[in-house]
Image 1 (tube, rainbow, N blue to C red):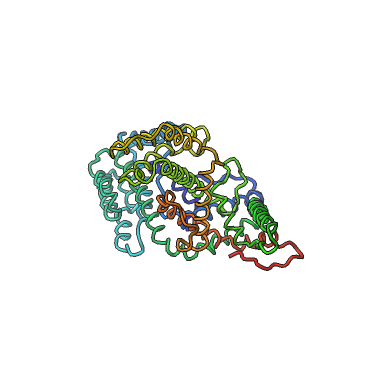
Image 2 (cartoon, helix red, strand yellow):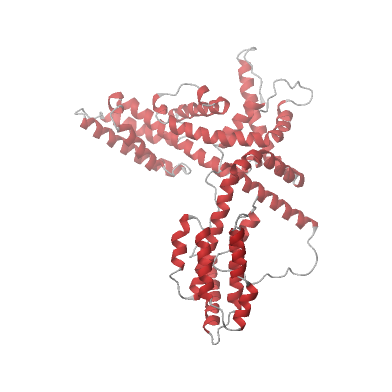
Length: 484
């Protein structure tokens, strides 16, 4: 399996080949601590890469190039220009100096060989014959090297190996006459072809990786834990906090009657803990280590969840003020949701932005309602109703807003039910406005459930002792434990 060290090596710009390998500096050998840190870094890199390949269906490697307006981009451009200008001087000198060109041809041969499959026996033999480096050096010594003839063979070989998407780039190589431009473009296109091959291999191997992913990630994390025993501290704090909340809920239930207390189970704690990740405070840096690789995905799902809660709240308020006569008009809900999505997009992270977006949305909703009523020949909403609707929508920025809280609780119940048994067991029944976003909620719940299921499969053995210690202190019976 490729690791991020390999990726880092491939991230070097494809049009600037390495002309020589530098020897490692002499001196004292690395210390044990440095070696251990490097091994830990490699383990983390492999774990992250494997996890991304398994969970991100669109995962692929992309050629890396620094932004042109950055310092790295400017330095890269200067170095590249100096390299190829130097090669230009060598090839246009009298007599031409082919020393670096021969090294480039050797690297071209190596890159082509890396693209060959085991079944390419004849092509491999032909490549060794045409790009016989010893013969090419002899031709250089006798002034008989035909660089364009060799480049023509290279282009023909690239055309037979490249993916269809690279056909135009390979054809464009045939129109280049300047040898420096030709070599530079050959390296660039070969770099793209190498990336294509790696991505094809990843797609081909993904079904096999899925079968081994749980055991692989679990073993890798155990290696990390062996080297860094504190790697579960934030996870422990995360589960302890949620377990305390569950225990408090159980205590309140007990106060209402001796038979109403329900035991706190590990499953309930885990479900609530995973739900909490969708509302994680961005300022809280103590994110559970076992879910850290999915934080970006979970943050994105959390933001989408907030958006759906706000949209459903706006739909509920609008329906309450306008009635079904307006709300059921063809296309009205679609226009209303489109406006809400456009105005609320990106505003959830900052309170001031959300306030401003909701003020604008209130005016837009009133405009849509007025147009819909006029289209039916009806009377406009009374001024009091307009002011009330505008004010209710603007108040949705508050986290404790009753409408937003109601919709949020229903959504939480919907997602928890999906975690426990899928769509067939969801409860309670969604109110009509929330039902209008049920398709998006189901999609979000499916994505969330996939992350949770995989995480629970991998890290269940690590969660079990933490939950056992939290829920069943020494001396208490361990009945009801279920870490799934």
